[in-house]
Length: 252
Ligand code: PXP
Image (cartoon, rainbow, N blue to C red; front, top):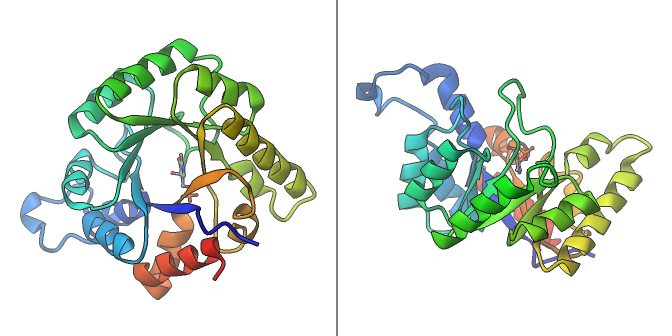
């Protein structure tokens, strides 16, 4: 069985990681030479069936640059989801960009990618204030959290419309004895989120193997997938990589 209704958000951060590896300090006059272009790749992902595009402009701008986010907002035809740290500076940037949604994530300068979920319980007031401000600007807010019942309840209390369940612990446990326990946590988390009236997304570490199990989690609305799709695109091209993931999600 599968869930044909689950949407796919493609995270294109790593397109910019590749560009920055060569052109971090490049002069703008080189613009014709600079590749790969996250906007061109986002449009390609949409053509291949992506339901939304996700980016995470980080404080240290290690991959996606703020100018990328402006261009994406103007050019893509689906939805722009902007992951961000829960800081005043990033909130101001979000209000300038007006993405369709923001997803609050913890951000630690040293980590290679987002490692743990946001602690909404400990940061209830701050999170609620960002959710309220974003809502007034017509921006939906999702919270990237571990599948922990207290964090889910706190997310609903903060007024978020969405949560994104962190699938990293499950993905890391895939070839270990704790895989089924981690999977059950996600199933329960999605059910609790749904009961709390939240729209439940999931992401981090989802790939072409574990998707066959992830797609079985009831109550999921959308999956945000980056690394595996961009990696596969190096061999097969982005359109093929997106199409293959879409068809695995749908199960056709
Ligand atoms: N969702 C969130 C909130 C993330 O921070 C990330 C990683 O940037 C992803 C999804 C995508 O994870 P991956 O690149 O492992 O697919």
